[in-house]
Structure formats: C-alpha cells, structure tokens
Length: 387
Figure 1 (tube, rainbow, N blue to C red):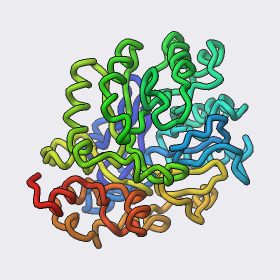
Figure 2: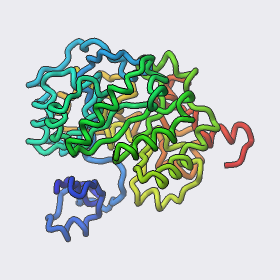
Figure 3: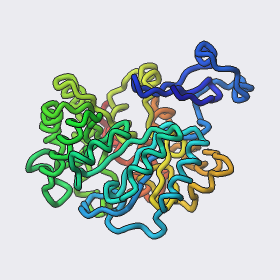
Figure 4: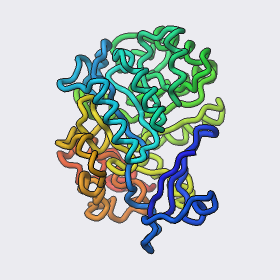
C-alpha cells in the first residue's frame, strides 16, 4: 500500500484490492503512520492537495489514425517530444511528488517503441501506469507484455458499424481483436467512449458488447472542443435532453449488464442535475473540475496544463523539480469558485462541480471564468424549467 500525507490526514492507495482513499488523521495513525508536519494546522478540510493523485501524460503525439474528433490533434510527432531518458526524468519528478497513477495516452502509445520501458520504469519507482490505446498494432505477444499496466482501455465510441461515428473509418474489427488479446492475457480491460449527439442512442449496444467480452468498465467522456474536435463540436455536442437522460441511462445499463460505468469530470453537471445527496457524493469522492489539483495533463513535449483538454501553458513538468505548488501554477482554475458567476454562485453543488468543464467554457464563451454553457441546471433556469 502506498500513502501520502495531507493536511486532513492522508491518501492511501492499493492495487489489490484496487482503491484510492482519502482518510483522516486518526485513520492514518491507526495504520501505524506517524504524525506529519502537514498536520500542524487546525484546517482538516479537503481542499488543495500537496500534489495531484493522477497525471494524464501523452507519451507521444504520433498516431496513424487521424480521428476527426481527436482532442490532442494527434498525427505527427510533436516538436520537442521527450526522449526515453527525459521521460524517465519526468517520472522521477512525479514520484518525488508522490503521484499515485499515470494515465499514458497519445497519440497512440503503441507507436512509441519505448512504451514498455517507460511503463516498467514507472512501476519501478512506485507509480501505477494505466493506458488508453486504439488497439492498432496489437498482437498476442504485445498483450502479454502489457501486464505491467494496471488498467488498459480501448477507445471505442460505438460497436460494429457505429464504431466510425466520429472516427471517419471503421476499425471496429481492429479494436475488437485488441480487446480479445488483452482479455485472454488476463489484463483488466475496459472501453473509453466519447459521447456526442450521434452515438448517444447506441450506448446500450456498447454495454451489451462489453458484457459479452467480459470487460470490467466503460468510461464515458464528454465530447469536448479541443484539438480537431473544435471543428465538429457544435454539430456533435450532446443535446439538453441527452444530457439530462445520461446518468439514469448509465445507471440502468450498469445494473443490467454488471459493467461499471464511469463518467469523466465534465459530466458532473449532468450528474448534479438530478440532485444527488451531497453527503453521498462526498463519501464517494465525486468531483467536478479538479484540473491542477487532483489531476494534471502533460503533453509529450513536457508542457503542462490543468487537464488534457485545456490549452497548454508555459509551464513545464521540469519546473516542478524544485517543488510543486498547485496554487502557484493554477491559481485561476483553483480559485474559480470564489468568483463564480450565477447560476453557479448560488448552486448547491458549486464546491463539488466547480463550474463544470472550463475547456468548454473557454471555447464557447472565450474564457474559463464562465460557467459551463452546457450545464443542464443552467439551461433549465434560463428556460424556466424545474430541476
């Protein structure tokens, strides 16, 4: 079990069984840990962490698929893409910050020849590597080598003829073959599904497929305006009706098929629309935008942003070598609730949702300081509907 001290107590993490939990000071002491200098405060609230718990790191920008909705705009290798040794230096920095998980993506990670060397090194220094790939270039031999990863998800926005709904080409058989290889190798395997207007009605078929393949999860990511997806966002963004029906739909299908359904933080406004009890959400560690706090996004050249969907900043991962301060590097994002505009300012879920997706707000409104324009609570208030 890995752990890290925080002002409220600490964070503990395990792979078997898999969990990451925030615990208070008494619980840390009950586990045999000593007092921490971080506890020299009466503030035991869970607010700013000493470092992110997870980092989304694009291991390469290379990808031969060129999906029209790629949020990274992947295709060719990025200028200044990190070498193997520099990537290991980055991992050393993240390890010193006591980051628990690193989600490797791209581009397509299998197009980088040192993928397994990097993943093995992350393991060696105590960081659990997870992976998202398209499935291209997968073979049984490669799937056996992938046992170094904690979780591997295959990007799939629909099954069979619906696979190409956003991607422009039908590589379903390729993705299906990759999933088969991973499951046969005994690797914890799931699906990443980008949800937009055109594939919403096909979500039930994705659950049915996942159950048939004995997958453990489907993570649903909102279609967001970033990279090449900027060009199709207005055409393909989910409708108000889809936004308010998403959470009940996923709940029903998850129970029916026994597949864990996850949503990314940008869908939290859609969750809050249904007025779930705050105490339950707190106990489940549900959160909205935690860019720069719980998570970070890092591009393959080392540039850092609050999350993978926000514009790259002038901050580099190597700036953290002398110490990390979320407040120093991401002050605007982290102080968002203090200058929130209506209707967020008066919303019961403000401290949890934190205004929804700031990448969407930046694209639509021109600034991260606006509330998420697709928030269904906001839309309902504007049109006089009850929530």
